[in-house]
Length: 88
Image (cartoon, rainbow, N blue to C red; front, side):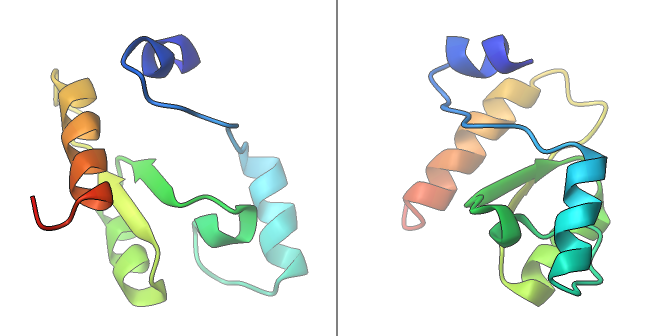
């Protein structure tokens, strides 16, 4: 997957697995299912609408993908553009 992001010019510094995520959130006493700011992540890409709701509630940026979206790469690129340039 990392190569796909690089192919389209989307920089990815790292991926966080569930074990690391849970440990980090326990240390911060955070009860959300995802909390990218704890890892210095500026935009979280996921396929769960609930993560989008948590993003709104806890003030972190998300791009939510539909698992059936065969054009998910374009969705991510467009989402990143909106995140970086909200007035576009």
